[in-house]
Image (cartoon, rainbow, N blue to C red):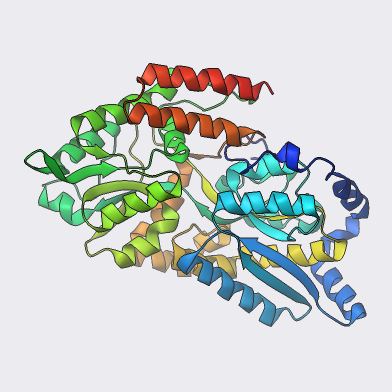
Length: 445
């Protein structure tokens, strides 16, 4: 698991440019570490007691709405039960916005001590020496987390991140619509079944489509999923070559564009998370029968839906497949040793079994410890609401997101080109060719 592949989504600005001259803090942090730092909790408590006041640490997070309220509540519980540490939480906007702010704060010298980082960005942040290696603090605690979620925790065989709000994309179903159309309410199992289900669910009034069978944001995460399902990868194992011109990289675009031409799929308008919001709203308004979105949307969609909502594996092509997603918790390298010890105590508490179970049940994100998945509480919850177990089961077919530094720019190139194909502004071959041309130049930088 320590051998990570390549990754996506690095940051919202050039890490190298922003962090020029910022690596010195890392060297100092490294010299401060000793074999004794594994007793982080007791160390933080003792040094706080000596100082006569609690250690204060800043925590930046990137989930709003109900999930953000849950984070605030968890931090409050931590502070109430850990009198020697005060965690100050601060919402920073989406992953994109949070990443940009973290990088700017590191450059300015006022960075947080703990933050959420989207899993595909761990490699880029670690390579830029923004993150603190965690092994000296964990004392083996990393072994308790689900192995399938740890692929984006390591960079160059070193541990930099702990799973927190973790997800995979799922297929969401309006089971009432499926039943009314005489379809299996458990949903399609293959790409061709997805096409057939979409045809059956699409309803027109004259020349206007009243209901589409299927919709998905044209997003890199879902494109990755379809590439994996087709037996391929985005990048070569060494991260130096773009592979999307192979059959597995072309197949998703051919599939999507053919469904769009048939009029049975809707590509929601808007960029990035705006398109996700449109797809979810269309689904709730019953203007779309099936959508791709994150397991992290499960609780919110379930409560808002006025129909029988189901969740299923993403349909298979050659096989099932999905990228893992969401964010991990990381420690910043420039924090003081006292702050780092307190930061690890907070990270471990936030991700431990006792906290990850209610977090999962409240949000729909996956529980992150093996003990949590095997607990009676989760088993009873899964029995009562099977939708919550779908993402955990799909982990059998999941892969970590690519993690090479600089992939943020490459991801944007790929998304721009596949969107051009979807909008009819370029053929599939033209879009893939342009993405290859631009992408290979980025990988050679």
